[in-house]
Length: 224
Image 1: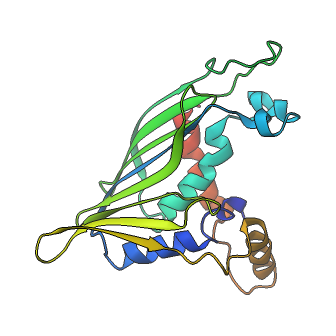
Image 2: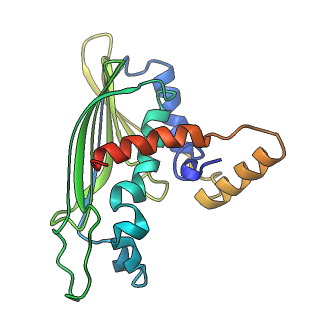
């Protein structure tokens, strides 16, 4: 078991959105757009986390911190069937200005990728921590019959917005509220899933082989 299921495939928002896509509510998905930019880095909420700014210790910045969750959620909605075919990307550091001049960072602080998959799906993906901007965590999924807009993390809004056209060709906007009341929390849900895997009640939602494919995409975004 690889643990990127923690914020993704074990939570109600994932299953709610996936059911909508599986039912064809927005038609064929042709594009995913996700971005989240913030000025702070790991050390603003964990002063002892200076190690996270060192590539030799952390491996990378926001893409390795959050990327496994982003890809696990978005590609999992499509049963992990799309395979990456082409990518255009950038990753930059040296942007963040730290109050303490002794603090140095050599991980990426801002990056983005435009990915094309073998199914025809395109996916624009942007993350930043230490960028001179604030953009809320937001996912937009575009289909041939409509689109969805929502914030992925469990601690943010439970609302899922759907934009669509009815049979009378009238543009509609529907807001759903995902019931999060029975979700035990991301960490307890992961522990329960791990125990179920150990006792043979279920199979890992993110086996290591699948997580490795997601990690390979992240390394390509970082130019590694």
